[in-house]
Image (cartoon, rainbow, N blue to C red; front, side, top):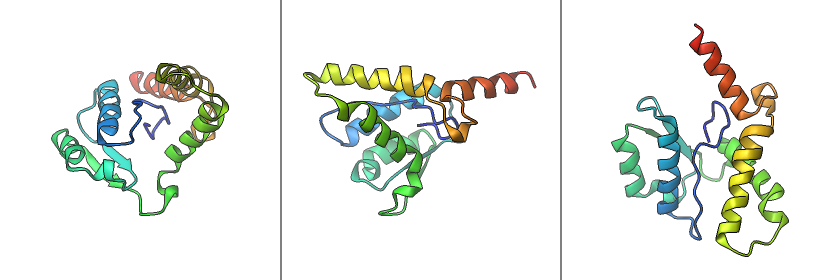
Length: 142
């Protein structure tokens, strides 16, 4: 999640919540932004985020790593809220018969609903995509 716009910019799906999953999601996010400086990656202190392979990846891309305090989900409230609503509005409501069915449902939730149709109070009741578009339109006209 890009905290500026609350947009989900990289995600991945796996049967394991491990470093490989985190690295796959990171690569998608990093490639979607094409920004090579000034980045901060914030997460909890889970083993998948503190793994040396992930830390080396961040270092190689000059990305500062930031961690929430142990046992303090409020430090990453935006992501915690996103996953709460993803589960409530998407995955907890149905039974999936294949991983591909789950992947398509999550894709639809993120790309069609969350990023495009769900306004956020913190974004002046705009969607993540609207907020970004407005920002870049203002920025490009300066």
